[in-house]
Image 1 (cartoon, helix red, strand yellow):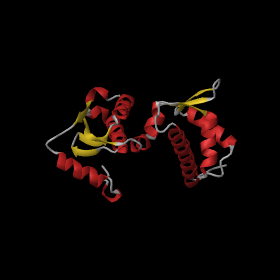
Image 2 (spheres, rainbow, N blue to C red):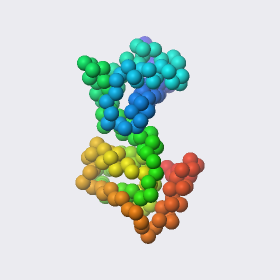
Image 3 (cartoon, rainbow, N blue to C red):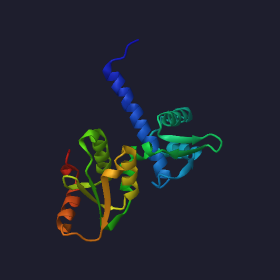
Image 4 (cartoon, rainbow, N blue to C red):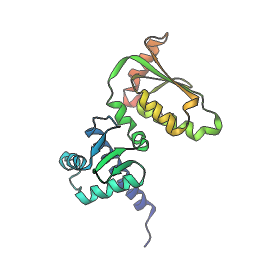
Length: 195
């Protein structure tokens, strides 16, 4: 039996959607504190009562949890029936975790200078901070008005670029007006740049 490329892509899309849905459900239950260990039955309750995916069965849920563990997104403790995010899972939903954070009065800056031989890692790190909501101010200077230092540290560690970047919190800068305009334009979907 052969599968067409279109049917294989459709199947992959379904798997990715299920992955995102389950990880998001877990994060929502944890109130987006991604270091929380949560009971597997609580996750099933959240999914089964959410009404978003009425076609989900307990066996599909169990199968998805198993696949998430096998893919490195979750750690499972079969004795306590608990589930915990891995760093890979946190990066997969870093945008949702960052959205749940409240705005702060101080700006948070990330600056990095990652060498060209580490281009793939640099690109992955850049995508992660963009997903968090960072806006580019200069070539290697990014800013956000949320406290996401733990997420930046996680991304830097996972991509192995921690020694090439700096995370700075600043109450005031001489470009506050420019930053405010950039952050305001970022919240409008049509103005998000595709770097």
